Length: 263
Image 1 (tube, rainbow, N blue to C red):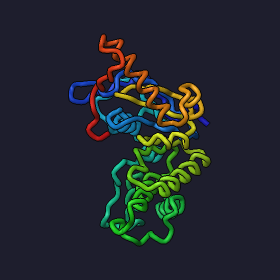
Image 2 (cartoon, rainbow, N blue to C red; image 1 turned 180 degrees about the horizontal axis):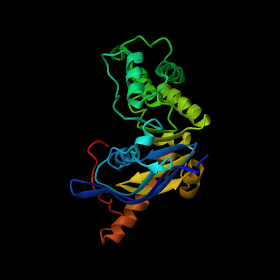
Image 3 (cartoon, rainbow, N blue to C red; image 1 turned 90 degrees about the horizontal axis):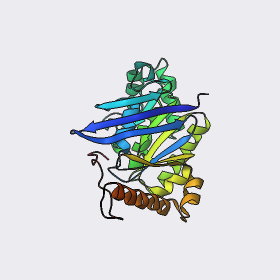
């Protein structure tokens, strides 16, 4: 197995003439669940769009599964789940999945659809229109659409947003099972308690990487009792350092380079 599923060096992304991400380096270890955590506007969605190859105005090096991000060879190797459900509400679950299988050029679509449905525990809902499903079930359909090509890397943009604790727990159970099968998952969130579900954490603030660590290392290094307070401690320290570097008032919050319009 390759060491890293994603390797990024000196990444710079510009929007509206201003840098959103400026000089970012990071690795995503293969076969693991990596949490991309940070507040809204920190650059998470922009980074994920860059990894899947759909972000413009990008410079630097972004290698995904040993190929340049967005390469045609990655079409079936990378699954992308956007925050807003990217499925069609007027189609059934099976129709949606057959459509996405066709887009990815899956050679055995019927088998792929059945496998994706089973993985996300939607058996019995195949003929149901997506518009009649609950919010949690729609999230599962979106995940199944990302899975239908049997990808090596899953890029999931805040997949649990708006879900109740039980549904969030159930989705994380699916994520852990996928990682155990050898897939790599890059999962973004601004819910800090999800940090404990990850093998590794990438903590972002204002387009920069505040920390690349593990859940245990995060708590140990900050002395905080939980992930949320540990993250806030790192954010406060980063803001103080940024204010000092810019000659601002010590302790004043650093101004983000640019707020993402999406998140």
